[in-house]
Length: 139
Image (cartoon, rainbow, N blue to C red; front, side, top):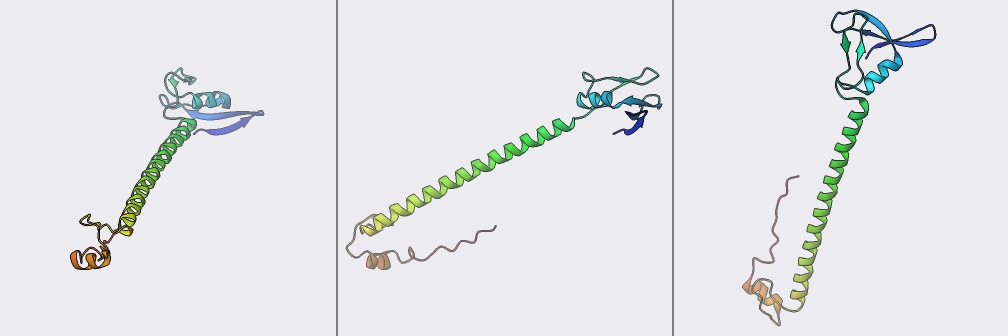
């Protein structure tokens, strides 16, 4: 970014020609136009020796717009992940409810047979079923 000076009440930017190295002043309005419309198809500036130049790279507005778009995309991705986890939780709750209803009706969750005394059947026929699975989840 160029240094800015005030001469006779007008504001100028002190710039340096990349080709011949001469320092010269250009009005701030021309520098602003060159900064806003970068590249060879944008605003071209000429040094006193006739060399043309222009600012390259993205404008600040383009950088901000790109960052905004990137953040919106990340937000949408996180929303999709949250929705997927909600669907998984809902499906798991459904399976739990289904198993509870079957168990309360006396249906064995392992062999799908119905028993009057389900507790005795589970203890004798499926002793490992009631033991909780201890899974370590690394976070």
